Amino acid sequence: SFVTFFNSHFEGSGAVSDVTLKSFDWDSWLYGEGMPPCGEPNFDRTLSSDAEALAKDWIAHDEKDGSNAHPPSVDISKWTSPQKVCFLDAMLSGLENRSPLKLSTIKSMKELYKFHETKNCEILFRFCMIGVSSSDEDLYPVVVRFITTQGRMKYVRPLYRALFATESGKQIAVQTFLDNKDFYHPIAAKMLAGDLGATVSEESNETESESKACTIFGIPFRTFIIGTTAIISIGALLLMKKRR
Image 1: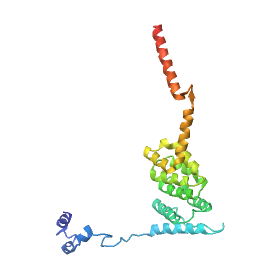
Image 2: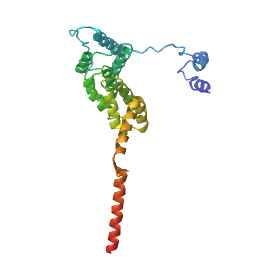
Image 3: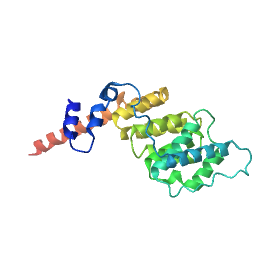
């Protein structure tokens, strides 16, 4: 067993005292429930605390009335990407039970942090989620470019749903999907179609109906062209044989 192996490895090595080996409570560690007996780990939360504090400051700034209120002045240019992600996650959590940010707040964040210009998917995704929930139409082209240049469902599904949920972005979400559905993996395309609901089905049915409406002498246009081409080819071959 593991316990036997562990004891035989460290016994007499000096790395762990024999007293500790004999008194170690294996039953609690291997079969106990809940957190380990040693308690919760004591992590250094300095970096995450700074990010969470800045998120609270931005939400508080958004709740102030008047245009004279100055946005938080914390410089995050030296922050690492995980810190910025932590900041945006804290923003998203703080916005769950309240109205979206004002457009003026989104504009201030764009001017200060340039999140909408970043190449980091994790940062861009989170900022787009915040901006779309506020119906920031200036951000829509960024969102569309993002969801049509890579197809990871962890990014595209939430953004399509968020865009579809807004009055100004609903049709953009549907049309963007219809224009790019062949770009996505079949499973992703199926899931996205389900997220966008009946609207996509209706649009697809209209496209199919238009396609069926293109007929010549009652024959679908595509079938007519293929058949005509085949007849001409056969006729040309017979004519060449006759000449020989």
